[in-house]
Length: 455
Image (cartoon, helix red, strand yellow):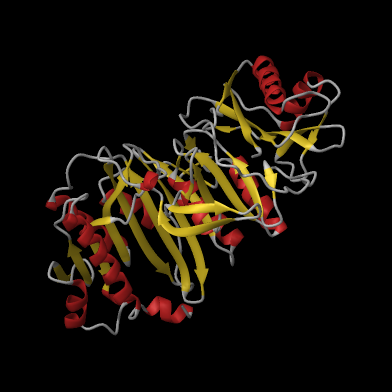
């Protein structure tokens, strides 16, 4: 099996430019080379063949907001001939930066699970710019061991590299690792795979299916790995999802709906937004709109955070208009939200202009992370569907689809509101989750946006 990546961070009180990093690192690595990577987003320490061995990222806001972090990463595929073990090299580079910048160096990598399954394979020689730990003709493997895997610049760099080279990305972690919602979403949306290594078996961290390795790629069986089973100690975290289509011929400020939906759910508006974790800019709908317009006609995705929640904001240009989708996961709470809060949520999201909105609960480890075991589907508390999104659906048809707990409202705007009186973690909760899935599938047949988008 290839060695795992080495991940370090240097915490400083002030940002350092890439030029300053170059000046500090060059004398610290002796005969090795130091230069900027081709994207000029990283400083790289290179071996005698000019092959990058340590990547040093641009400074960014630390997750706790108490300083500035420099990320350092080294692949674990083989030794550095002019230096020795990769972990010694990245340790020394981190120490030199911390000393010169008045900061503190911290190793984020943890010991990998021992006696791991054999992933031996005829790995390909790595191209000079490859940041992965191992490479086959179809997959780039990244071995991570942190307890919290975030959407860091390093993970984004890995995904961008495999996309340029037409490969799949596979992130391998021990069962003790969890993903942030943003990292989980990125892997799922890009078709990347999260492989969990228990020491005895391998399985898909999102689906739980047992995996086998043929030296070229992972193949899934139909069996769930026992390690994927939920635990009695799991808690339930509130989850909020909302969507609207902004017409092209109307004024557009992406992000205002998201802030209003958060307020309607009893949360504060988002405070930070960006494309990595931790997000790098204060939450500003005008800035988000500008960035999305620059990326258009392609989609754009923003990591958003606020007091007690993390999530994603997606902007998807389509023929009928621009879709704004948001989803946030909040800190777990004890007990279901009171009926008054659910009613306020329904009124608030309708008034904000949401066309689809759901407030529910997702299984959690006690935080907002996605563990390597079963977390879904979402157990709903209340769901809201604006009638203008489904113009050919009659009142009777809407009530028939939505079921016994649905009601039609006319204010602030015509909508279908469905409340679910079921406790998460019970058979009734499982049935409520299934009912919501069936309702969404039924409404899709009447969705004017899907029809106009050609879905």
